[in-house]
Length: 113
Length: 110
Image 1 (cartoon, chains in turn purple, brown):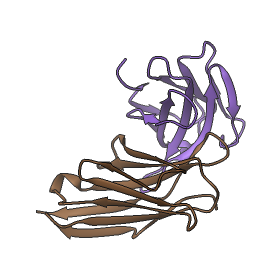
Image 2: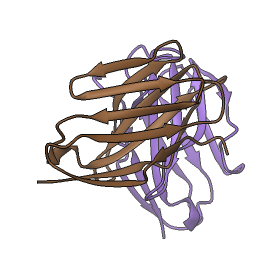
Image 3: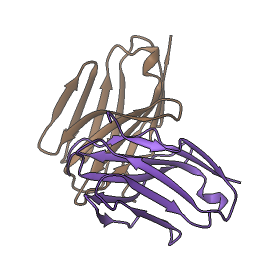
Image 4: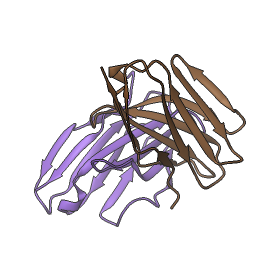
């Protein structure tokens, strides 16, 4: 596609449920990033991939959060046993390669009730 | 903290005036990128400046980078009401991750 595509755009889930957020990066982009952004704050790094390899997951808050990119294209961020504090905007981004412009998707709003 | 820091945190100007936003960071960088965000919506990429560059222009935008002072500035000339947004600087250092500042709110009054 023309840009980074994320789904769902909005997700309301009950506490304790698992959620999966999907990211479809720009075609041909090697690097894929996940960020989380709270209202009024800057995006906070979660993890990134080069191709299918997860290069850095130091930003994942705890072991309820995981991400994969099995074929080096689409990525899924999974949050298990969601908690209210997980409510935020989750943003995916991609870049053709390291050191180049990083393009963000519109994000997925997650609300845990 | 590894975060970049924008300064000022909020700026209100009249249409037609210039707006300057500053960003400071603490580590050596490969590049620095500026983004705009309207009303909590998408992050739009504005300019990327590499560590060996000192200045870049794009339309009404001018970005400078001073690696000796670990700082960058974004100048918007002849501002318009549509420039009202939050602006973020973000840098890539030794790793590939992009580290964002907290952002700066610009309000351009018609």
